[in-house]
Amino acid sequence: METNWSSALKDSISEVFSTSFFLVPESYPDPPETAHQMSAAGWFEGYLDFNRDAQTVRIWVWTPKRIAVELAANIFACDPDEVDTEQVLDAFREMINMVSGNLLTVVDTESAWKMGLPNANVLASGTVGQAVGAAEWDMLFDIEGSPIVAGWKMFTK
Amino acid sequence: MALRVLIVDDSAAMRAMVKKTLKAAGFSLESCLEGANGLEALDILHNNEVDVVLSDLHMPEMDGLQLLEALQKEGMVPKCFILVTTEGRKEKLRQALAFGARGYVLKPFQPEGLRKILSLFVGEPDGDELELSPEGLDF
Image (cartoon, rainbow over all chains, first blue to last red; front, side, top):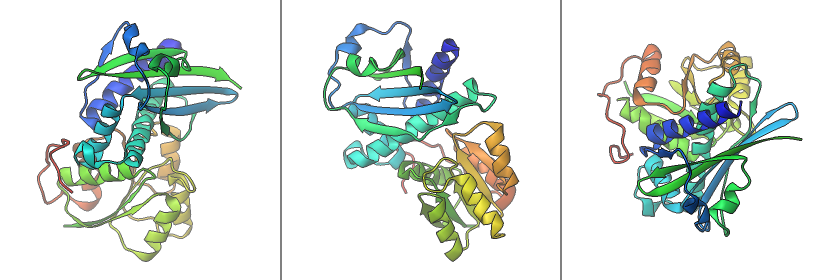
């Protein structure tokens, strides 16, 4: 089951970023520790919960500001310096929403999971490793030299 | 034929993306109204005639299914009500079709996908399909 969610999340990120945002992520099979040591201040964090009975699965995506701004600029068809933070957060929520919906079609063929609404925020401090520590499983991608980190965790209420 | 379109999505980013993709698919727009949820869409539909509604399913306040249900009760589901959604599971989509949706496009989507389904209800677009790229369209 863990393999399903991890591989589906990885595939969904590749699909959504390349199809909708014109950014092609390259996946690292073994995440280098250097990404975890980077400062997370200014990074964008998006997450969404899936619920089934007492179980919740949360998925996250973290990117540096540059990538988040580029996502928004691609959607709004403008220069990166023309988008404001609210537009970037909106685009980030939509990215998480699309990644989640795409993932669910793979892992939830019986419609057992209820998909929540997407959330996004800007991290104020800490390292990427500290942010990613909330996830049980994580994975790293590279887009034109910038890292993207994703993760997920299943917990029972 | 230039279309009168209503795009319903709680994300302004997604409304922009749908509009951009419509143009990339070659459709001319006479008007393009936008609603952030089902309630806003209902209000718009009470006061405007549209040819096409492109609506998300998951939205706060009133979601796409509730919007369809409300429109069905009033006997005013537009002839071309298409869902543009991340919801790829058959059960939800079947419910939406039962309420009068004519089809769905799954996010992420391409101009070709929108063009195919809309052409069934409003005919082929006037313009050629354009390549969708960050720089390719100005709207």
